[in-house]
Structures are given as structure tokens and as C-alpha cells.
Image (cartoon, rainbow, N blue to C red; front, side, top):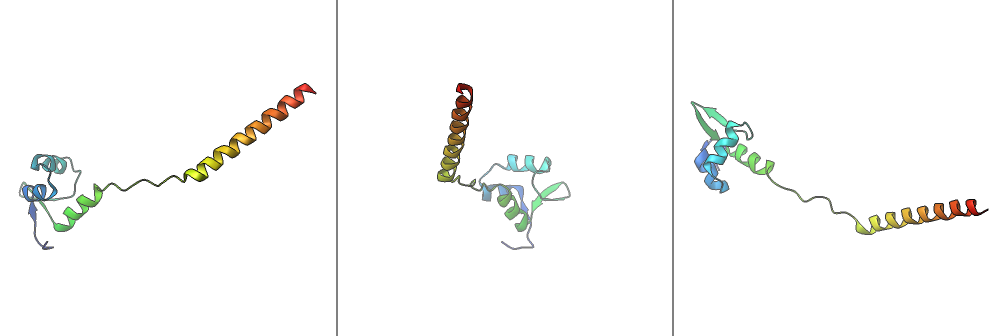
Length: 92
């Protein structure tokens, strides 16, 4: 895309495969960056790229199940030891 060009709501909506109505609503609500000239909404190439980047979903961090399992087992062992020592004190 030409960095100096301005794209209409319809052009951007077609490129993103969303409705022009949705995109215009997002502009009116100031949820997406755009250029507002003479009651018309336009987008620069950088703004389109930023719109895509702002809506990109990144995967969440993977949980290390082995480490989590190890922590749970250690916690259970401590709880078991404290229960057995507490019951030994009551018996004595």
C-alpha cells in the first residue's frame, strides 16, 4: 500500500472482511484510529496495520504441567506430614 494514500471505510472493510457499518461504528466510538476530514472517515496504511495488530490475539503462556504437578505433590506431602505430627502430639 502507498503510505500517502487514504482509504475509505468501505475499502478497509472489504480488505478486513468486516461490514462497513461495524467499522464506521468503531470509528464513531473512537475505538479505532482514523482520519476524520470533512465528515468523512479515512485510514492510512499505518492505521490499517495498527487496527489489525490491535485485534490480533496472541496465545496465552503454556503452563508447565510437570512443574505444577511437582508443586501440588510437595504441598500435599507437607500437609500430610503436618497432619501426622499433629495427631502424634494429641496421642502422646
